[in-house]
Figure (cartoon, rainbow, N blue to C red):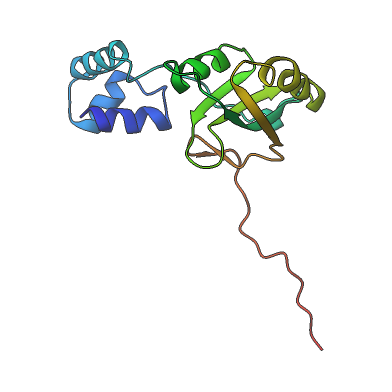
Amino acid sequence: MRDKILKNLVLNARLSSEDLAAMLDATPEEIRNAIKEMEEEGIICGYPTLINWDKTGDEKVTAVIEVKTAPERGRGFDKIAARIYQFDEVKDVYLMSGNFDFTVTIDGSSMKEVAKFVTQKLAPMESIVSCATYFVLKKYKQHGVPLEKLKDTDERQLITP
């Protein structure tokens, strides 16, 4: 039942215990207890709201940063990740396989603000070897949810001889 609760909450964290109980053939009390248990175990870590910032008046710039590190002996990647995610600008930190160690996602009000974060806070950190920053041009889908309905139309023009 836990997996079914989680799958439903991922798509809509506003579902009530009563709604989930009806969907999963359980009692609201069973659902509340399962959710409370998952929160205490750290399985459910929060209930963020997904916002399409392009639809608001706020200018937001999202950057994805590839970070290469030189982990210190005995401290490993967890210590570096903890130092990176302490910054308010940081939205996501992932340990990666491949040519770099971490992917860091940040939001800023401008490209200049993102650059300032990278050059003044992230890159100078001990253990950071290099950073490569990429700016998100448009978001189509986030957390499994499309941010807008795209028209499925073929806009190519017919050319006839």
